[in-house]
Length: 379
Ligand code: SF4
Ligand code: SF4
Image (cartoon, rainbow, N blue to C red):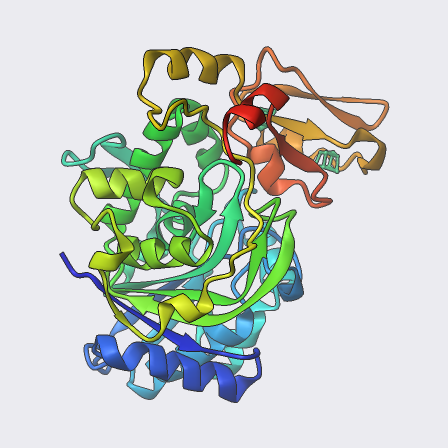
């Protein structure tokens, strides 16, 4: 198990600061010596929706540009891509490339993915997802670099390198997977399966500006000033979660990775290059916790019963709804209807996947925890 994680200070997104920080983060974990001329490298960025970089919901284009420059200097061909929540099509992605500022990578000589073909993958070793669909540009590449944004996440508490690779699954197919893997544990295991199948050669986190609160799209940008790198996506996530005061038991993908022996259970077992603790934000705002944990044991029978009764639910601030119906489009359970041009959730149909919270462009859907559940637990 590779436990090396590197962290470097990056005070802003100005081109020199970003490139220097990337080089500083990469050097202790072996740099880019593995990149050879003619290699095809797919950089899987987080471009979850069409939002400007200053919202801190997507990877800042300057980080993708600086990384592309470093790879191209070594003679590699670079394709930057993602499959956000909407359709995996040229028209939709064109708007996302423009909206997120990601067209900037073209100036470095990289290409933006324009291959919208998909493939069925069989993965017998998987714990949850033994078959799934994958976007072709990742299959075609000689190596995948997982370039993620570090943020809070309504469903998984934290999103970093592992969750970023859910964007390897094409467009609306992701909603179907929310429905199919509809417990935290199953969903997290599916995410770890996809991540392990993609086997990123390198994982890098843009944590210069992170997102706190109602992440992954409706929260507030928070300065952390860091770029992290690791050859192990789960080790990167363990270090990143630590910066937000989260333990593996708080993050289902980490819990799943720990149980498979892909990462240690304690950040102290990682080999860290850089002063990780100096980047911790003590008052970092998290999303509400989903599960009820009593007396420190979430496996207790009583906790299981209560977790059904007191589970977190999505709540729409209807007075601020623009009527765009994005939430209705992404809802895998068809639990959302539009009434008088405002969205409404049918709580009986809702499977609490929080796709609506993730993709509401107004950020007005929040994770609501019943008051009793809040009293029982810290978050
Ligand atoms: S209403 Fe929201 S949380 Fe509920 S199933 Fe639909 S998308 Fe998921
Ligand atoms: S996505 Fe948000 S703004 Fe759009 S209809 Fe749904 S709740 Fe309203």
